[in-house]
Length: 300
Image (cartoon, rainbow, N blue to C red; front, side):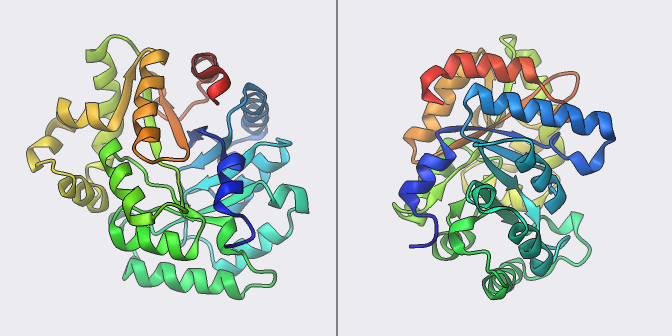
């Protein structure tokens, strides 16, 4: 199919990964970059299959995480195509040595209209970006890239011109629909946000603080409406029904069970984003990452 087949990618990505917007070394000082390097080295040691650099990372962020690890797959989740030219990204990937490039996946997305002044014709923009990656020297081949995709059109593009799809803020039901759209061979690696707190009211409060921002973005709300939620589910930071469908709340064992629902629905890999009440997604919750690794054990 490509330089990285579906079967090989399944093994490369592993079943469970960690997604974190705190892995942006370009947005912090030397001490922060050192903390990130230590954290990703530990995540690799714990056995997670893929480390996703969340929240519109730069090529420099990806290079730093690759350099701080030895064997784990590193992916951008998701690089904003409006912020970096395809030529710039291709040159940065070409600079990686062969072994490092073999464990790097370029996650690409079109972001959101309210966040990008030049946002227009997102599907056409993504097609043009992929064309430019194909034309680069050396090219960033389809087997080296994965697309943020929610709706059927972008999912089909992910199957046709990339390794597969990395949907964000989705339910297990969406995962089942995405698998049907993608077909059996494309990689499907949804993100799942986790709150490790057995006090469900408190866990939902933590989740609402994060979800409120995303409910201002039409791409997400339109997708949730397609899945059968109502406008009323978006009020006050999200209904209980919506929160319980989008998040994994509770103990590490409960998170493991929820993750299993996505895998059973057709996901090859699930990228876990851990929220904490004090830091949201901005910190490095190493204790929680360890707790989850212990719960998953040999299933990582």
